Image (cartoon, rainbow, N blue to C red):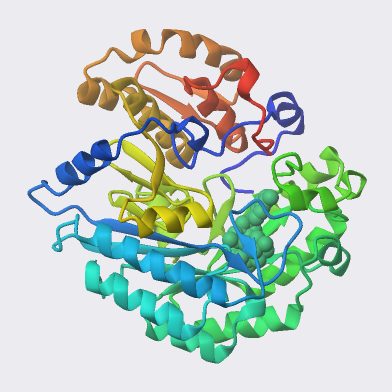
Amino acid sequence: MRNVIFNKILINKYNTEGPRYTSYPTAANFHSEFLINRYLSAVDSSNKDLVPRELSLYIHIPFCNSICYYCACNKVITKNKEKATEYLHYLQQEIDTKGRLFDNDRRVMQLHFGGGTPTFLSDAQIKQLMDVIRRNFNLSKSESRDYAIEVDPRTVTRERLRALSAMGFNRISFGVQDFNPETQKAVNRIQDESMIFSLVEDAKEVGFQSVSVDLIYGLPFQTPDTFTRTMERIVELAPDRVSVFNYAHLPERFKPQRRINQQDLPLPADKLKIYQNTIKQLTDAGYVFIGMDHFALPQDALSKAQGQRKLNRNFQGYTTHADCDLISFGVSAISYMDDCYTQNCYDIAAYIELVRQGSLPITKGLCLVPDDQIRREVIMQLICHFAVDKTKFEEKYEIEFDHYFQAELSLLEPMRNDGLLELKPENISITNKGRLLARVVCMVFDKYLSAKNHGGFSKVI
Ligand SMILES: C[S@@+](CC[C@H](N)C(=O)[O-])C[C@H]1O[C@@H](n2cnc3c(N)ncnc32)[C@H](O)[C@@H]1O
Ligand code: SF4
């Protein structure tokens, strides 16, 4: 296993609940006193750069045909396609409203349709949405653009994939989760292996530059043996990227998870073994281990971004194009620009009502104070690059790093003694032994996390 050492004793010692740091501060800290004027001034100042700043757009489509019991996403299960028609009407209105706020010379280098299931929509609906986006924003045709759509394989055909590629999407991710029939049954997500194989082949043939699959470890009835078999098939499938998520089982928060029996879940020791095997199988097959839970073929843009230290982490996980401002649309969608996070309301009816009144549907947010900015950058460096160059922080923020983080550095001492990281005068670096526990190192720098509010997050591994 290159770049990572799996040390069971240390993992057991440090494995705790903690944020995934797709943002810092995490969404749990966004508050409703956030003022829309603050968002508008962030937009205004983001337009002012001499060289127009590039954009990343996220579109949330919250509908699915059927429920997967494990799911922690913001979605509505319905067979009624009409529900989407009404939602789309207001989504387009939101895109029109926000589109007017941003200068048109700002190129969109990243576009992500997520959900729910974006392909719950018909091709005509997705095309119409793309037309509205194109009318409002400067979409790129560059090879290096990253235009992705999340796809439930049960909702598409080769023809649909061709249509999506023609609309400008060049990256696709399929929800696979596991091939084990017993697991599929227990989570109410039955999908045929051969269908996934033909769709991945079709996606490559119709021109997607990067094909990705999502898997989850820690689901019911998974054992090291069953998951080894799933991973053998994934290696044969040879997608460009593989995301292997740790199952976040929080039944008190996500009601459908109550239909999963706790006693059917793999025991912690087995779960660790499953992840250990997965890392070995994928890296032995030539995949580069990206961050903490992604894998990519060496020629994929994500591997190149990691190699060039251009990896970025946001609500879509690890991504390329680190310097874009993020503008998001639809229920619960989160935007980030000029040190301000904003989040749209969670509920569809409330969202529709706000947009109908002509308001921006933002109901929460947080503007980073200088201390948040410094900590955010430390956490993002650690989680993306596993190292922090202290001198850069001292120059950029005019702080004396060791003095500023005196308390944190002393909390890191035991981790240094256990070999998880190296503390040098000029930098902090996470070792191969500490890599899987990077989230725990980040937690030391998280000012909002106290001993009592670790709850509500999933286990680090
Ligand atoms: C929006 S879904 C992907 C698109 C499509 N709806 C599908 O399921 O194929 C996003 C991904 O999040 C992951 N996911 C959902 N709930 C999860 C949970 N509780 N723990 C870990 N990963 C989860 C799954 O791997 C899923 O594919
Ligand atoms: S995993 Fe995907 S298809 Fe299943 S409920 Fe969640 S969002 Fe919908």
